[in-house]
Image 1 (cartoon, rainbow, N blue to C red):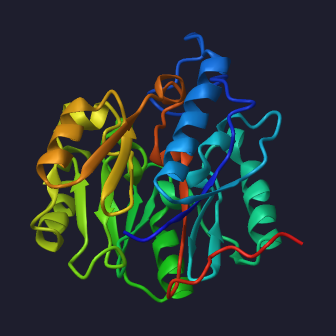
Image 2 (image 1 turned 90 degrees about the horizontal axis):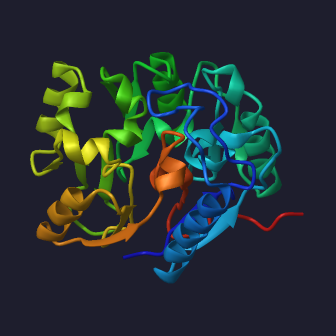
Length: 282
């Protein structure tokens, strides 16, 4: 296991004030204090596992900034920023850009709608790209040209799983161990052709069922050994343990009300050749 670096944003201004995905209900109360405690426990859990957590400053009026994974895709010293589909989130992109530029990343502006690691997942050699609800297919071409790695485009068809990271998780990448990467996914979230592609590329994948996916059991963070996931996803935790991983459940009931869980809150700053991916802020 290698130490990872992550970017998170505290939920100081988190609320469900609008509905832009099927999980959001503005009439359902959010316990802001509990949301803060749950987020802090997630942050502490990652640190206790030996990883570094950087913080993006929360901003009034941007309640979804807590879902930091949607703000970019960061690899090899390059950060492709976000262009959000929904107007309620558009202003988040500038906050992410400011952070990357202040910390030594070469920032690349997206030329099409792109929602960061929500729809772009690194396997250590391939980039898996989701499209169909939030990120446009044209973004995958820009990602490939920007980073120089092949992108496998996967069409999402179930609006409950509107981002790739709600339907698929990278459990181990080629940087974690000298073995092929392993993923977990829910086939029902994908078009038949995309599900077949995943089956051919990852024949040893963990197959999640609809209950796992609906509990946000695939919206997880793995370091190749420990898997931090929503405590509600008990079935997925059992599958992971049987496959040799160590599940680390965390309670995120309040942040789930916004349509996100562990992975949505955590953007990975992917390293190159073991070098630190973050420079000190000036």
